[in-house]
Image (spheres, rainbow, N blue to C red):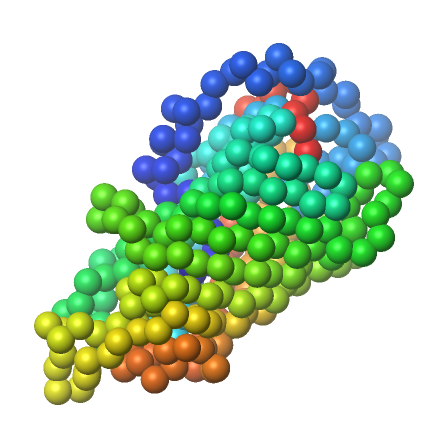
Length: 300
C-alpha cells in the first residue's frame, strides 16, 4: 500500500520456482533493433518484442510514511533477485506477477500479485504497543485502459487508467487476510527529456472496513490515556499525486527516481487517533541490473 511497490523476498522466491518454460515455444526469435531507434525507460524498443525472460538484481531505497497519515516514517533499503517473464498468459514484471486474461489495443485485464513495504516491526508514537504493520501482499484483478486516440503503429497512448482491486494479506503473519483495496489511478507519460522518460500520476486509495481498521482502528485492549478506542470505517484512505523519472544506463542498468505526496484530508477515518499528519511524501530510488536475458522474444 505504501509505494514503491516491489516483491518481497519470500514472494520473489515462490514466483521464481513457479516459472516454467512451456510458454517459450510460443515465442519468436528476438529481432535486434535498428541502431537509430532509442529504447524507452524499460529498455524496450518500439516495434520490437521484449525478451521472453530476464533475470538480475533489483535495488531500492525508500523514505516513506509507515501508513497513510502516520506520524512515523520508515526508511527501507533492499537488494533482491528478480526475474521477468513476458508470456502471452503468465506475466512477471514491474514488481508484480500474475495471469493476463485479456489484451486489446484499448484495454488489458490481468490477475496479479504485488507487495509493499511496511514498518520495521518497531512501531512507536501513536501505535506504540500495537501490532506493527508489516509487509503487505496483494492479489486480485486489475483493469488497464488506454485513454485517447489509438495509434496505427501499435504504440500506447500517453494517458492510461488503472483500476486494481486486490485482497490484502500480511506476509509477516503467515499471509493473514488484512482486507480489500481499490486504487484507481491515472498515469500520463510525458515526452522524453534528454535521456529521461518522465511520467506523472494521480490516484485515490479506498479500503474496506477490515483494511482501514488495520491502519486506523484502536481496539479496547490498546486504549491508553492518550489513545481512545476507535472503530474504523470503510472508504477513502488517501489521495496521491506522484512522478517517476526513469532512464537506461547502458544496456543492462535501469535507474528510476520516484516522488509522491499524499493526503488523508477528506478520508473516511480522518478522526482516528492514529493519524498524525494530513500530508506526507515518499521518495525512492530504484536501480535494476539485468544480468541475463532470453534470446527469444516475449509478448508486450
